[in-house]
Structure formats: structure tokens, C-alpha cells
Amino acid sequence: MKAPVFDYRAPRSLAEATAILRDAGPDGRVLAGGQSLMPMMNMRIVAPGVLVDINRIEELARLDADGGTLRVGALVRHVDILHSPLVKAGWPLMSEATAYVAHPAIRNRGTTCGSVAHNDPAAEHPSVLLTLGGSVVIASAEGRREVKAEDFLQGLMTTALEPGEMIVELRYPPVRPGTGWAFVEFSRRLGDFALGGAAALLTLRGGVCEEARLTLVGMGEGPVRVTAAEALLAGQRIDEGTAPELFEAAVQLARRAVDPTDDVHAGAGYRRHLAGVMARRALARALLRSGRTHHA
Amino acid sequence: MPEQQTITLTVNGRVHTKDVATRTSLADFLRDQLHLTGTHLGCEHGVCGACTVTVDGRSARACLMLAVQADGREVVTIEGLKDPAGVWHPVQKAFFENFAIQCGFCTPGFFATAIELLGQNPDPTEAEIREYLSGNICRCSGYQAIVEAVRAAAAAMQDHQRG
Image 1 (cartoon, rainbow over the protein chains, first blue to last red):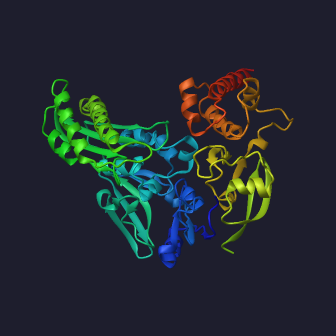
Image 2: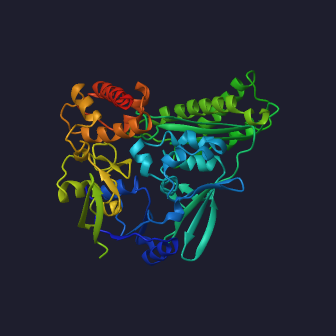
Image 3: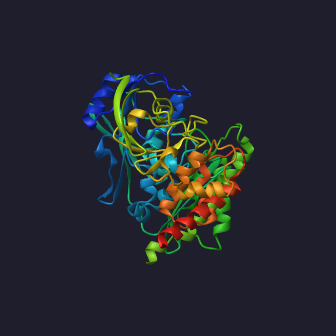
């Protein structure tokens, strides 16, 4: 199908973009990479009256670190993240997750900020932002505000974005030395939407877990942090001997933390089982990678 | 005129200036207004990969880009793959020689993706080829021949570079 008629605007500055969005109100929609919005418009699931194409606003293509915090502008494409030495060195969880995002042609255009704004429950970037404790910088004609990931991501394709607002930047705080990371995902065909996945961070010092993060992907209305498992692992000595039992307990908590539903791709029982498998794989891989920075 | 706009873009080395409806996809623009019907439209929501073209050197789904977004850009379609002397691109030649084309519907998208891969990675492994082409669907089920064709194209292009 074809997209319905809309009023197309291509502002050259952020001020111009937010002014258009203010005037458009709920009828306005930001077009960045278009890899989710355009299909939804072609299928007529959404029909914005005013389409604000931000692709000509050069300042939004910035990808850099400011005082240890990674800043990802609204025009940074998945392919830019994937090939960034800065991201790989400081936020490798993000590099690993981005390799699972769709296919090359989609990664060439799709943006990380767009993925977070769309908040599809099977998408990688909302869960990565949540796991890394990041935040979302939002602009409107009235000014800017910064919202933490857990407050921004509100449910099935729902966020804290209000009419007249747009994401300008994602911020990721520095990852502590000694932190192991892993992002794993399962899909029927490489690059397709995940049936399930998990992101894990394990910060170890002298073999003892100082902090754990575990997030499940594709299991509910959005990314699910398994805080019970995080609390269980924190303070524990994690090594080859203790890991199997600790991770098994975390797996059980992961399965309890999700409430998947049946759909055409998989049943709820299958998904709940998968939540545990993904959690175990992510934790095991994160453990293998932990402590490296600390000992180096 | 927010619902109609004049754009200037380069397609296969030729500059075009056209009026387009802003809701027109790049794929429909190429097919209907430039009559370059080699870009095929399958699903129209970015899943099948048939409409993949090259925009400013990167592969892109022409169904998920608006023609107005291509204003000022450089687009290459399957019609632009031959060299000026009319000689096929090594990827085209390799697909033909390895029987990697059956009905041909998916082929233009595979070319765009394979050419991008070989630009980044001149000697890909079979696994790397399969991963890179995973966003292009062939429903004649010809993947084996397609993978072989990309390997053959890689070898031919490397031989050519060595002289």
C-alpha cells in the first residue's frame, strides 16, 4: 500500500523543527530513518498530518562522548553505532546489540533514537538504554528536558514524548571498569524481530559482583528489567564454581518476571522458557568478559 | 506547496529535476516518473528487500524512502550497473553464470546488497555473505546459487584488481 497524503516539511534547524511540531500538535510526526514509520504509513496504521523530516538538520548527526557520557544524536544511524570505535571501546553492549538490528539496508537508514522513540517490545535499543541506565534528551519549542530511560519507556510502543516534542539525543553514562557485558537474541531468521533476547551487565571486583543488570527483550509490553535477579547476584562471589547455581536462580526469577502472551510467532510458554535461556546465556557471556578492564 | 515539491537528484549518473507528490516513495518515483522499472516492489514495508537501491553509496529500501528525501542525493539502480561501454558489473555477470537468477524479481535488490558487501569486504566468507544478504528474500529458493555467485564475483573482482 501507499502512504496517505501529508504535509511534508524538511527544516534545516532544530528551532525550525520544534516550531513546526508545536504548531502541528498531535498531528505532527518526526521522520528520521523511517524504517518503522514509513512501513506504518504505507500500511496506513498511522497517518500523520504533518511529517517533519529531520534528516537535513546536521547538528543531530553527532556521535561523541562528553565527560565520559556517550551522546547519540537523533540522526545517528545503526550503521554508525556498529562501526564506531568509541562505542565499541566504552559501551560494547550497544555495539553487540546493534549487530542484531534488522538487515544492512535498514541499518544504513534507521536511527537509534528512532528505535527508542518507537519502543517496539522486540527492539534492541530500548532495552540497551534501560540496561545501561541511559536517558533521553527531548526538545520542544519551550526548551529541553532529560528523562531517564525507565521513565521514558512507558509500555507497548508508548513513551513519555508529548505532542510537540522530539528526541534530540540519547545519553549513556560511562560503564564501570570490570563490567562484563552481553546481548543475546533469538529469532527465526537473522535480523528479524526477536522472539526473545536478553542484555546483561556484571560488574566484578576481586571476583565479587558489585552490580548486576539483567533485561529481557520481546517478552511483554517493553523491555523488562529483572530487578530480583539483579539483587540476588549483587554481593555474591561469582566464579566457575558458584555461577551455575546463582545463574539458575536468576533464570527462575527471569521466567517469573515476564508475562508473555501467545501470538502467531510463539506461545506464551515457549517465550517464558526462552526468557530463561536468554538470561542464562547473557549472564554466562557477561561473566566471561567481566574483570578484564579491572585486571588490565 | 507542502504536498507537491520539485526535486533534483542524480540517478545512474544523470541529473533529473521533477515535480513529485511528497507522499511518493523513491521506488514509485523511479518506476513511474523515471520509467526505471528494474527496481521491483514486493512488500512495500521493508521486509523483502526487492526494492533495495544505492543512495549516496549506501544500500537503502526504496519503498521506505520518500522521493523528496532523495533531493540532492545520488541514486544507483540496476539500470546503472553496467559500465559506460555496456559491460555488465562483475556481480551481474556472476549471477548470470552461476544460475543465481530464476524469476528475477528479487535480483535487483540482491545486486545492490551484494555490491555494498563487496565494497566493504572484498573477500567475504560464505557465512558473511549469508549474513549480509539475510535481508533479501528469494522465493524461487535460489540462495545456494546466489551465495556461490557472490563468491564468484568477489574472486573476479579481486583478479581484476590484481590485473
